[in-house]
Length: 91
Image (cartoon, rainbow, N blue to C red; front, side, top):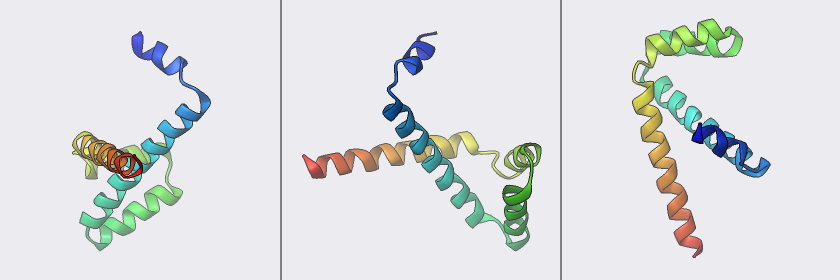
């Protein structure tokens, strides 16, 4: 409930920034996953995410990214550290 109130009180700019950060996290995760796949897996990933439907994408994530939660947390921490570093450079 408190989370819903928090989300409702975000400005458009804050919401857009949150979505951009989320997209950045996902991009980093998919880049890591792609790098650890063999050639057949990379080809399959490309096909799924270029022309696949949501069901195929979800199946891919369940099969090839069983550590999604862990990767998400790691990348979120990395981005947080990157942002803090940039802020400290400015200040």
